[in-house]
Image 1 (cartoon, rainbow, N blue to C red):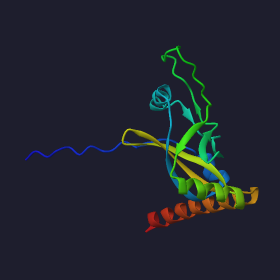
Image 2: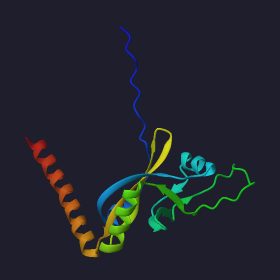
Image 3: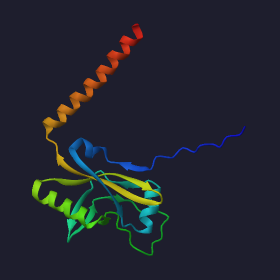
Image 4: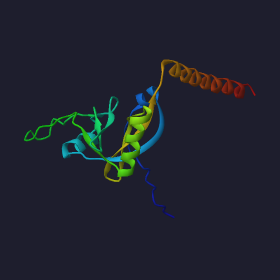
Length: 162
């Protein structure tokens, strides 16, 4: 009997900002759409995007993604100018914008981009409301991670002996 092949979904994540998880405590995660131009979508599809230094600002009750580097393709037309670091508008609901701007203004939070991903045919941004880590916090996290690795090694050795 013939069975249909199950197609595995490819990872819809385009890029992940690992530096953000190292430098910040992520309190809450949000998703939003981006207003992009055609050449930017083509560059994102080919993987020429960098969000490691990007952050989100509030300007006149609208949210913008800044410092997101999208390199233009060499094949794209030269009829228009391609600004790789232009501010990209985020598509959020008004109540989300109000909540985020209030948190950022009053309590010292910042908003950092965590990842870019595809949702159907739309490019979405996942960003987090975050507080910065101190050097001591980073050392504590490093020690915890090393201890977890050591525990796994010890457990593996004990299983091999039995």
